[in-house]
Length: 341
Ligand code: NAD
Ligand code: UD1
Image (tube, rainbow, N blue to C red; front, side):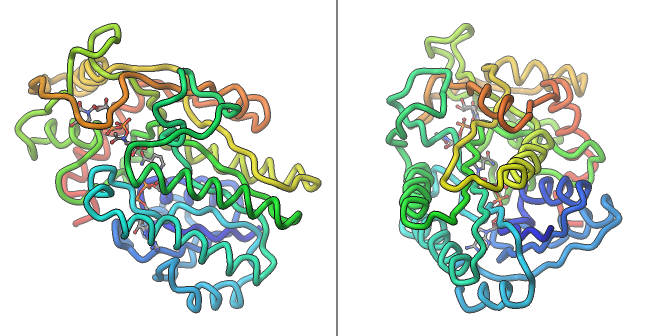
């Protein structure tokens, strides 16, 4: 089976491409490299001992996309390509709607033209917005995320729902990721943020390796056990395997049409202080930190109800917080400058 992976050179994409190759899927990566490096694909090929077809291109370029669908017989698309920095999305919202919403519409149009109907979308826990109670369950109504980034994910979920209503051949899966962290256990591929990291783990890892002085913990007065925010962190390789499980599910359910959403998380909330402690334990070194003001838009605590994915996809996040920390450190300490070699 041939799978087109948009954004496959990025953090989650590269780990998923590796899992796909290991499960005997053929992979074509389509990525404009706006937030990634081709080096990730070279490393994935070495780890898997298999080749990946790489095409540099933008999902908004329908002509180029069309040529890809003409050149290859594509059975399914996994769609990672998007901009993902929450803060930046408030500064340049039009770029976020252009890439994340218009880009997805372009991709779906080209898929329709070429009669490709299997689609897996990178959604996010952010679609539950601020209205829903925890744990988040797929039966809840979509919420109103505070950022344009989050809104772009809600919009695409709406687009998929409307498309499925209009076309009974469409077979879509929205995977709502919670907080993916960690790296492949080899330490060869991992998260390589450009500039100052926005997310917790890359920041902690850069403090540990000496690239940043200290971590700012955004608030210690939330109504949680230790006052810091709680999130559902899951290992990126568990997440990668969730995509393989979703593809297998589509293959098993040939009668299915429509769109189905699945939460991919562990079902446990872990605090920022607990993450810092776990990282210190993994590297046997203190992480300098200070408590700083709350970050606008942060919710106190959220985690997944992951029962639907457990049952239907036969998928479970298996790797422990300890392993997430150890693998983050292996990647960061052996690649202090990421893919810049
Ligand atoms: P990433 O930035 O590492 O990967 C995204 C990839 O898409 C990059 O390789 C980038 O170059 C490419 N890309 C961006 N715009 C493109 C375009 N217009 N055309 C072609 N390629 C383009 O991000 P990631 O963390 O791997 O996230 C992958 C997906 O998962 C995104 O859709 C993101 O919104 C979603 N997601 C991520 C997280 C997270 O915590 N990392 C959480 C929830 C959802
Ligand atoms: C953020 C996004 C969310 C997105 C997710 C994955 C916001 C409001 N939400 O989620 O939409 O889907 O990333 O990309 O940005 N923290 C610190 N210090 C730091 C960095 C983070 O204390 O330097 C804290 C945050 O306050 C948060 C936790 O660590 O409580 C995790 O932060 P982060 O990794 O950015 O993920 P989310 O905020 O859950």
